[in-house]
Image (cartoon, rainbow, N blue to C red; front, side, top):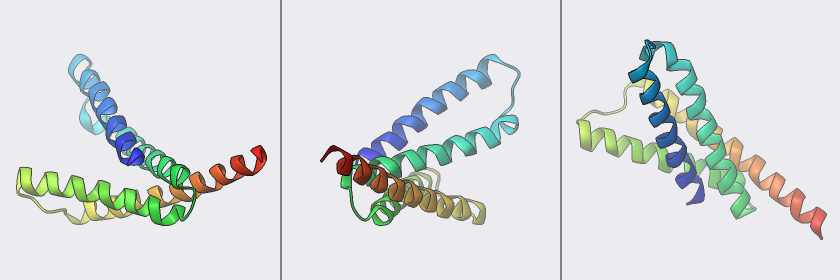
Length: 120
């Protein structure tokens, strides 16, 4: 749950910042596409990392579930709000998001386990 909260809070904060940038500068959305994508990957990695660190076991599973739940929420928002399914590009992105969250979960478990071994 902490991972999903982190992901959505990070996304809201980044969206607010980019909305201000797009509103008050001459920047266009296409110019920021790669930055936004990179920040999305960072958000998913961080969410998986937090989830794995809290759980302290099966990081690949908890990170993967975090990524899948994120993708499900985005899919439901898009389908119910805009009456559109994912296109091929979005399926690829969300598959990568889930894999990145899994990697974050694995790293989160390993760092949490290393810290608990040092303190004992």
